[in-house]
Length: 153
Image (cartoon, rainbow, N blue to C red; front, side, top):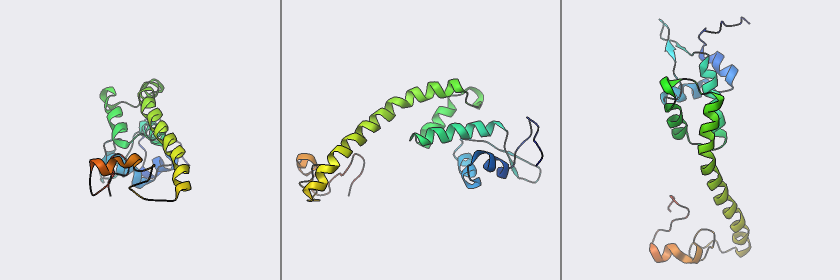
């Protein structure tokens, strides 16, 4: 297999193979504005080598639960759309750490309350201490009950 020059453009297949990201995901990330391609005279996509670092950044952020919209916003803060550096990751991940800590706390509370739900066996939206502590939702919202913040039945 030939070795590419440092400034050579990569095909979608090469980027997929080297990054572990499916070609369809590359196209999706491109539509979301997270990566960019150039087009050949035959209208084929080609990616700069810097795309591999951007993909590593995207995948690392996704792995810790950062939504793509936030990843895109973070990438948009980089001057001239440059490739993220280790220093960029350190700065951005520090910002995301508080959000991750909050999610961990919520999940810990849900885990702790889950055993009580299993023991009671009620599965009642009116009495369930996991989904509706002290029937707060019944008092506030007759009819449909909110199960978790942002979700309704």
